[in-house]
Image (cartoon, rainbow, N blue to C red):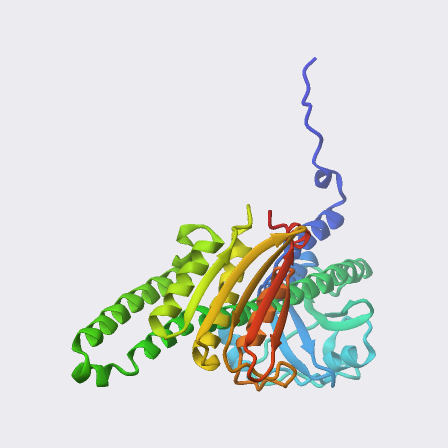
Length: 392
């Protein structure tokens, strides 16, 4: 005797009304777009109880309708009716009392205010609040039960159950959009920080190298040509960085692969653009995640840009080492220094950007400086912090 080993479809054994509810709920579940889920809700609830028309009203804290999504009515009919409902009549009654209403004839109800010009005639009515955790988020309105004089108690029960799932679907879609907006804000901050720490600082370095070229043209033409040629090479590198930045790739600086290679490239850049002597010392920490290398290089670039711009230093250094499971990066100079305890104004993003980058990889950042005694930027990141962040 032959037979199928497949389990029977659970929905095939459900009563028709429950199966319809199940299909309606499935149709709105997991939709991340708010506008799409609102429209799906009114379309599905209209089919669920065979209504000619359905609508979902979203109200603000004052009980005023701010969105009104419809199903069963054409766009031309919507436009002919005009402005949104104002929440009077039966619509307003459900908003104020926040409970279901089932009416056989709308025009005979004492709260009925009639319909505006160009509104299609409607007879039977069913209204149900949509709530999440007891708080109303909207109201479902259904009119003109097909195949019957009015909506039944069973229809009302189906819509009330559907409304519970609709509230959850609306809340989920709104939360998804909020997360997306936060992600956009976070990405904007990252882009702003990357542009400031990398590309803008590189361009600023080129301007430093070209500052005295007009004088050199007359006084030392070969040096002027050398400066211009070097600036052209640097601008080509900036253009490559912009291209990789746009396409979400790592900066060209990381093509060599190691942290010390990148630090040496930054030191070379500083030497070309200033008279500051700079040395790179230390040993390469083994197996650093690419993300950690990128952030450490960005911090070093910002710190060296500050040396070029503010320090008036004769000597600067970059040192990287590891001891007792802690990787330490130090950028220092013997320049003017500053009061490290002083509040930095909003126009000076450098230290704030460095701190954000350090925090993002689980590192600590220390600033040691006093007027006249130079500055040291020290970043310390424990190996365990890299592992907690999943950066293996």
